[in-house]
Length: 328
Image (cartoon, rainbow, N blue to C red; front, side):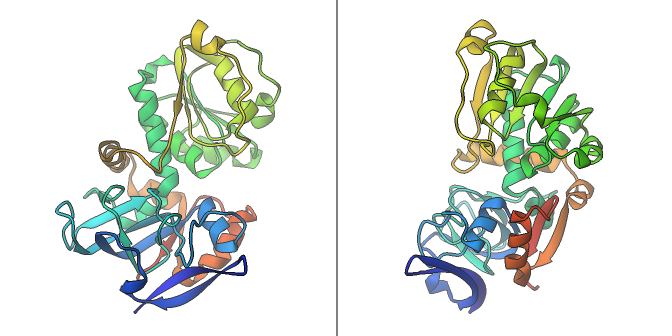
């Protein structure tokens, strides 16, 4: 038997509580993992507090991130004792996730933890850091080099935006941040932003084309802000779109794409091929260090997940929340 935070549904009402589970209650996937750490993402907080339709079936263990060691495996790709990390890939949404001392997971989204990365550091990165790394790789693959000009990052105070700024800065890029929280300006500059611009500057409706200002962008907001950025990207530039915190609509024209040859790159961190997934984790391990991950995270006990889910949704948490799941 082991501890798990389980969501149950009764008469369309969803509640989460700690339960004792056994292996027979886990999904039928080939790799059994003893979970050492997880993290609380926005999706997880919605699932735990029943404020969003995140979970696809019940009973279900939330938690879209996990790291731990393989206990048993029916796959030749993973052996008992392997340290592994999994972010996304349906974890904690389609099948039971990381808020449990054990998880049974598919092989496709599972990655061996890079040898230079500590388990808790991988959860300080989590889905947010993984998405940020994928966005940076997309810009690099699109030919946007460090000497091309400034990269602008929207939603800079959030998990994806803040990690993206740190990665870009360490790779030698000049970074401009957009934030709706002026009190975070010093923090964003410490991460590597050379300039922090107020979000209000980008909320006016965009013209089809505006003055060229940025070599590229990582956008977590969408809607009018994304349209504004598209109109301001330099000739041959690119925008990695990885979020829709401001809305899913995009009111723009084809002019930036045709007259300036820019690229709009969609980032999906949930379902991607193994090669890119492994590349992103290896890059995170090589570029970022333990001191950075420690500076943007805090670690809580397993039993504190419900309280911190409420705090996260109330905007009372800055940075990443790591959950220590296993007691040994």
